[in-house]
Amino acid sequence: MPIAIKMPALSPTMEEGTLAKWLVKVGDKVSSGDIMAEIETDKATMEFEAVDEGVITAIEVAEGTEGVKVGTVIAMVTGEDEDASAVPASKAAAVPAPPTSKPAQAELVEAPAPTAPLAAAKTGDRIVASPLAKRIAADRGIDLKSVQGSGPHGRIVKVDVEGVKTGAASSTAAPTAIPAASAPTPDFGIPYEAEKLNNIRKVIARRLTEAKQTIPHIYLTVDIRLDALLKLRGELNKALEADGIKLSVNDLLIKALAKALIRVPKCNVSFAGDELRIFSRADISVAVAAPSGLITPIIVDASTKGVAQISAEMKALAEKAKAGKLQPHEYQGGTASLSNLGMFGIKQFDAVINPPQAMIMAVGAGEARPYVVDGALSVASVMSATGSFDHRAIDGADGAQLMQAFKDLIESPLGLVA
Image 1 (cartoon, helix red, strand yellow):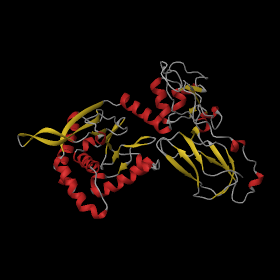
Image 2 (cartoon, rainbow, N blue to C red):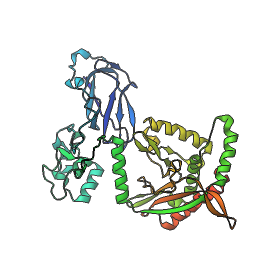
Image 3 (tube, rainbow, N blue to C red):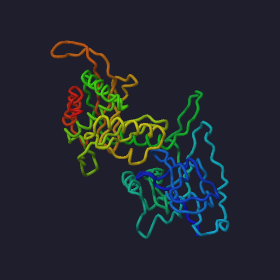
């Protein structure tokens, strides 16, 4: 009997993805562990491996197809001892990839076809819906009984309830097409080229909008003298030169933030509705600008690692991020984030919190500034650092303690290598 290969959930938050590229074709034999396709998730492009052995008899979803729901059948494979020629190939095997560019105009995004009858979303009196869909429906006063689901087996998912106008839900409330934006954006006759958003950019837009709308941010800024840190970095790099290791200032800042969070555990937290989660280790998410968009690979338990190890891990993670090869465990999680725009000459900025984290440290460029040293005005290398804090979880005084701890560790940096 043919085996249905379904769109996998390659991350805990994935509800749909883009089938970026097929690496097999109809008639190919695959074994467990063979790479079948590249799938673009909400964070990265990942390889999809075969689980069963057999022959590809049909490609049900063409490469380049966007918005493929998790659980959708994307290919068919015969079993080990079956005759592949006895199974007719699907017409989808010959479907060409969709065009990569579209006219620059306000357009509608077609909702993907459900993988099962929509009525299956309701079993007796029980509504089958994702937790996120239920929460959005509750917040907007939407009756889920009148919403049709487009998820696996008719499950109601986020997009189904987002397409329903509050107070207007009905048995036909889930539209087959939803606007790409709340209203068409006028171009005022200015020539432009439209570039379709990839999954990563869509997620960045959604998460940052949610963060600014739902998280009460407070911002605390300190000026930090860098001379001692720069001197220590120079000495360490000289000592590590024979090992091929070159530390960056950012490597030392990662360590400083991690140690500061351990010293001020009230800031190493996450707001989770009716509870506050206080973490026992500091996992630092570091903002990296990848071609597909911003992503934050994680240095796990950074406070206990040496700066040379942090440097090596950060280089490897940054390379994978830029190649779109990060695995979910390498970018999901983290207890706090660090964003450094100093290399671009930015003096100071306020970063947006990366939920469900409760703080992010934004650091600017080090520059020569007038500075009071030992009671006398002098010139020193100084940088500005701004902490953004979730005020639901972190009080201003606790945030101030973290900023002071961060400043102390950088101005007296031997604590970073102790």
